Length: 393
Image (cartoon, rainbow, N blue to C red; front, side, top):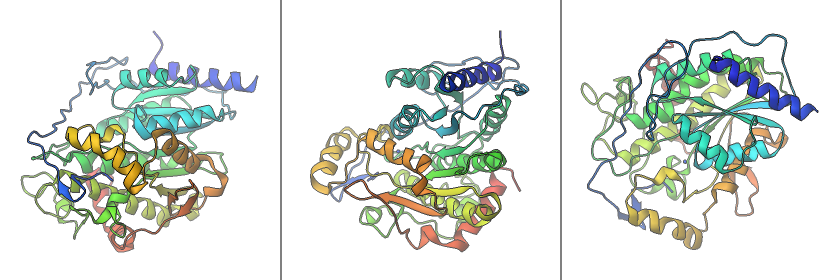
């Protein structure tokens, strides 16, 4: 049996040869929506040396790490650009993957926690064989992030764009859930996992021969308190980062970044502020010397996204029509995917350090971040604490 690295590389090369020939709130209309049961995510993995095996076929299936293999020498191809999209098995990530593949110019690495779900999703939207590669990534596990980077490098593929899209959201949870390393799960997945992934793949992006290599982190209007949606309670607020400094473990410190009581909806919003601060700090530290374009975006309110899966049924039923007919902010998954794909590949969106948004006519523009989400001193402090938590400092 061939190793995973060789299989992935062969799939990518074959495709190129052929070409050459997730308002997220726990309230609705100002009325709190509560649920009596909490959404608990169970994480676990087992290391098996050698080939990849699927340990479980449940929704949170985990693939064991694979041995590192040598890249295929002498078969470099530049026919298609390569983009990694995290959380590409559903919602915005899947729609973006389809938009990129449909352009005929991109090979997409679908970095997902559930390998089988991603394969089924790719087939369900008609992605041609060889136009994508599914690779296991559990952002809530730093070991999984590091293993993903090793596995990706073993394929010999270049990296032109990294899209940090995956997110978890627990708006009705009464108690926090924790990651493999003991951090509150929303921040561990949405911020810390992506922070580590982006830092580890920065060298790969810098080596890209693309004239428009990019690192994109998906933001959210819900964490931007200079907007109406961002002022719906609970509002994002990182405070002095005391909870993050303490490790978000819920034992010796609060599971919340600001050190307050746990709130699932706020934890998500706080993590998105971290995403936007991280993008700007990447820009300040690395843009000039690497020429990598760092950006964030809010693609619009995707009211039908699976990110709402743990919300109460009433919210899931009423939120889409509310966004369509009242706020007029509704955006389909297909349209949001096209918007993110635009940030990936459009030459006109090649300005670094920008938070992109779209108006009702689907025209992109540079949006303004809130005071907290654009605070350079807070971004620096967040960066330094995050480095320590993920083991980079």
